[in-house]
Image (tube, rainbow, N blue to C red; front, side, top):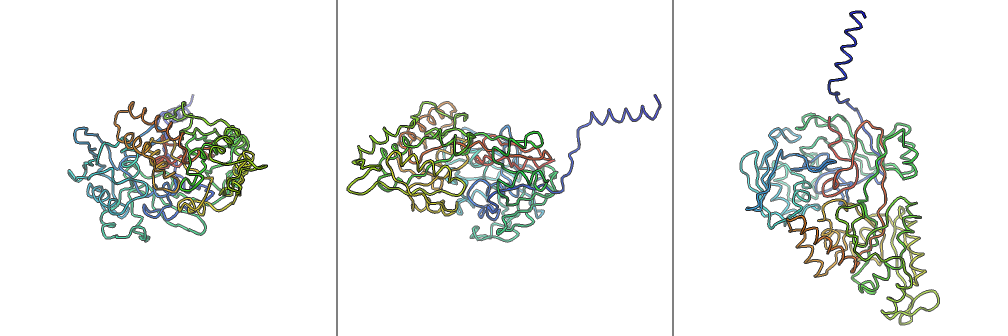
Length: 510
């Protein structure tokens, strides 16, 4: 063997043993069906998960999560001090703001105080008593009471604000200039086009965890139907895709199948009759064939929902809740108890036909038609009306509806989600005033013993399934496809406080 060949072979062997150098990616494009999720500042992004994700590329939290659980972010390490009911965080001394100012404990203390005066939609500030600066890189946060999901719901969700900028901002919901997007995160916003629903970010080359390998990150608006062809043409690198499209992309693209963390549910206006009577809500549950909804509306790609909210593949699932198997006759019996009498096809009371309005959006009209069919077969006349998602959310928020087909993510995260979707104030919450549930939820969220907390979560599911302030319908199986340039992943328990989409900013780092 010649000397040159030996040298080349040796060089090749060494190169195989050395760790791979991350290849820089000039532009990475992600397709999104909605497009606009609001200006990506903490106080202006839309309240749903994709809005939070857009913001999270710019602003960091104290801790974060990857596919395995909690990882350091602005805090290198942390510890719970049981005797003081406080967490102490050791901050990363290399972190700095996008404008070059150093990040310190002062910013953390400021943020905690700021959200008490200016509430941030994703974090309950009442769970925190106060924050105390120990030194520039150490901060102690005292809880107002024991709060089991603090790391997930506060430390891992709350974007830390720059004191030197926000100290002069009295109306953060109106603050929309370049300084509003001064964060510590791995990306900076270059362009946001609300009309076109596009976002363009550039890498923060001075990021304290290392410069991102993706130099520009781009979000574009594109329908699900066009996502597959766009992937094949190389116009986008990643997209959520319909199940049938996902199957056709396997082999050529990486296809990710999500856990059943997104819940489709029937919102019920329990503030007015007849929906205020639990028997009527139970009649709705018996009327709707949830298995058929999955089989037809979801084409088999999903799982019928548990009336207790958590999916069967969730670690918090309680299999013992009432399941409300499809039983139109049982529904009829309950309606008769309420004084309704069947006259021909539909039930009547006081000479009036039992008639309800069902709000749907274009994306769930197929499910709406099936629900309409089931309810009418049970004797409840349904007028279905299709509106855009914002109109539907507003109608639900203002209690200006009968029934509405909606949904939300977060069901794969901490069971604190129960507090948000049962008694919380958000539009995707049942906002149900029930003393038994309220007491259980307060006990559950403050129970620091894992096994005792699990018992309370089980009990909450049983009571919820009995009361049904909103009816869980199904958990769709969601698919994402990407070209493999970036190792996208689903975050354990979801991004932030439970967003079930595989767009974790950690995936874009070198």
